[in-house]
Length: 247
Image (cartoon, rainbow, N blue to C red; front, side, top):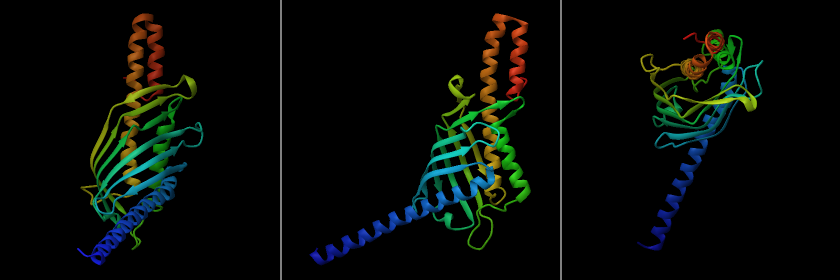
């Protein structure tokens, strides 16, 4: 191989590498900007995604530092935060109006669960998302270049190693949350809007958070009730009601 040919091949590879890195950055910027623009309209709270990278060839990507704020009337702590979100997209579907997500995996998320009488911050957040969607349909959500609402199809969603922080401040209790899995979101409908996807996920997350806390309270109640009798049992039953369950 002569020097001229070797130089040409090297230059071609360099151009491809720069183009790949540039496209990765471009796609990541689209995802980051889309989340930071549209998510606050949906939740009516502060939402911030710190970073995103998506491969233009494989569709694999990582979203980092997603923080969703509490609704008004609750503490200044975030409602929940995701450190890393791993996604596997159908390559180039990101450029169309039907985005196919083969897999979403969230590792080590943390939910801050706060309660007041019969309400909770996570429950209020779900109500805001549902109210926003009912009032606006797909309006305010992401749209494609032809102006049509972008539809999503998520074949597999998994949340691993979640933690529920019950309460605020130094007295808060951290509880492990069971894994959460959802399959074929939007598949039978030919895709669903971002609003509908958020509702489907948040309903399952809310159930998971409440189940985690009521299970923990139930275990505490069984131990304390055995030791202290009927008076303690009544107090524990009231505490269960606070967390959304009488079981």
